[in-house]
Image 1 (tube, one colour):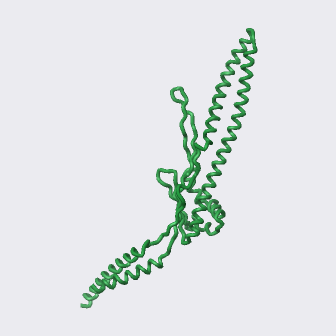
Image 2: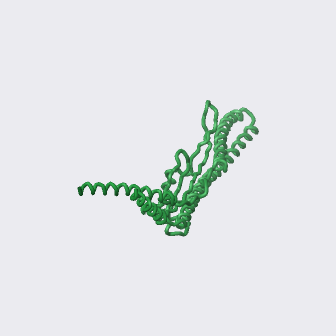
Image 3: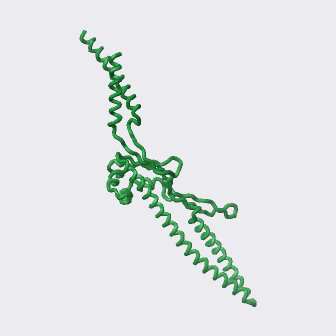
Length: 267
């Protein structure tokens, strides 16, 4: 019994020492939702036209993960934070402290950074998130610019078609006589063709305007503020002491068995 008490006491002391000398790691974490763009798409149903919403991400999650691990992105993060040591911390070729985990059945990512320096972790996780949001904002701006460029082209074509139709209708009104009637038939077919093309372009322009409206664009965003927490082997002094006490009891048992075995051998 005495050896067990000694083992427990020694174990408690060892556990307390381990608690205070254990290495402390800091973990920064961010939950980011990748943005989406909604586009209307025409579908033919029973000879009538209907619209459906087509959703797609600014970037697929797999592409975002590869972007976050890329050297160019890490360099941009270090430059944004004005901390050169971030480059080594996030470098995947040097045992990166960066972890990216997609959230199942969602368009979100959990981004984590681990390091003994809380200040460096805070600067790193904030800069990673800021750089990702900046990159995705740039992608959205380029997307909207391309849509506006196509819209400008369509509006010019619509204007030309509208003027051509007005001219044809005026010519049908002014013309008289039998030859004019024959010409009117040809003009009528041309008007129908122009109207069909005009309707298509007007509908396409409407869809494009809707696709770049704020209601159909959801930028990449930080779902909740970044968090910083300590990472310890033993989270509390009590757990460290309990571990030490159990270890002391185990060693006492092994020690007792070893003493008994030695006694039998000597006999």
